[in-house]
Image (tube, rainbow, N blue to C red; front, side, top):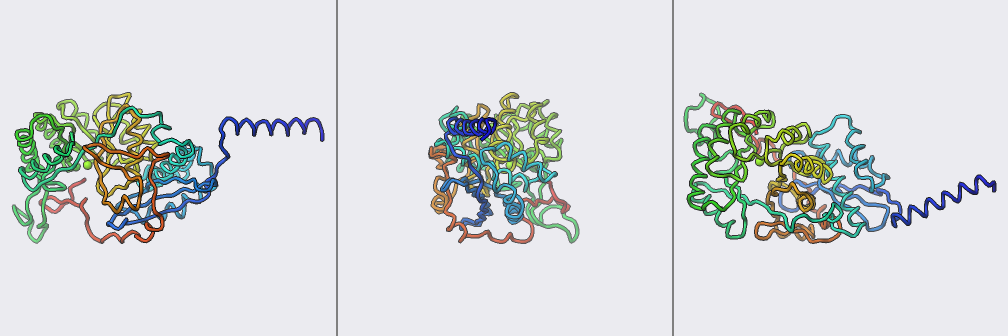
Amino acid sequence: MLRRDFTRAALLIAAERYARAAKGLAPLKIAEVRVIPTSAGHHYQWVFVKILTSEPGLYGIGSASNVHNAAAVVTAIRENYAKFWTGKDPDRIEDLWQSTNVRTYWRNSAIQNNALSALDMALWDIKAKRAGMPLYDLLGGKVRDAVAIYAHADGRDRDEVVDNVRKYMEEGYRHVRAQMGGYGGGGMIAPGKGSRPRDGFQGPAFDEDVYLNEIPKLFDYLRAKLGAEVKLLHDVHEHLTPTAAVEFAKRMEPYRMFFVEDILPPEQIDWFRRIKQVSTTPMAMGEIFTSPREYAPLISERVIDFVRCRVSQVGGVTAARKIAALCEDFGVRTAWQEGGDNDPVNQLAAYHVDLTIPAFGIQEENHFPASVHELMPGTCELRGGYLYGNGQPGLGVDIDEKAALKLPLEPMPPGDNWTTVRGMDGAIVNP
Ligand code: MG
């Protein structure tokens, strides 16, 4: 052997030894990407991604759930993303996130972000399992002891809303969202009532003047019956036109809201500047956002108080941590969105982020039937207005894959769903 070759071989051995000593872990590869779509036996449209590594028994789980487009997400991951990820190094989370994001050229779509989020959560799960730590420890450790959540109270009339808020207060909840009559409730004209177009729309119709009169009265009543201590929230579901939104924010001031959510549709978010100039009612927005171009200006201009993106719609733990860091600099807080369609993996990803960020505000409540806790061991527990994980390495959740595959996705029913609200003339009211 030539002296030069010998030196090179010796250097390579030394480099390998150093890598092993510094890291203590063998190199890892993504061996397989499995997509697990499931209804969980409860009409959910859940899509999970299980990333298996070259180390036997080491895998991670991520959420790609998209209630409105589950089949498209399944196909996109199976046919496109999975092939790109297989063989890659799962340790390089940021690099895989970035390279996946630019690979499709067009980005910031809901489906693209579902795939990115599932990848990201699963890779953090793997890394934290490898480190033998719950994810929150790997992310810098807890800055709070538990994650506060807000409950959803509704009712057909004011007294029923009062009773339902009170039930949650008795359970220990400090924060309760109060609605009256479901989606768009408080602003609906009953089917067939009022002046309708001839042979036209006769269903329940949203009218923003009705809403602007009814909802402040509801909160006046809630404060009178429940006192000042409970922190009250309300979701407008984006149904107001801009000037009505400004007026609504002003009318809600006397009730000292924790926040008013989604006062404007995403197309009109520039109007938040106007709201901030004239009202101190705290504003929360973001559950429909998928792009930094939507949330970043609202945060950096300090015109919202809470950002409410869904972690699995913005790019997972990595994206949520970046949003939280931006919030911290500008005095905005987080309130990650849940919603009844959401799944235990996304909830846990949000939970691990929440425990580690100074900019945490609150997380939306979501609870699951007992059979989901069986199907997905490690699903969060809810107790007295707080969310609890289990402290196991990684995200701390698993999935009974065989059982899940026996509970496949159900086809989406044709026709309108809850997002479709119409006005008196039959035109769509934007959510
Ligand atoms: Mg909302």
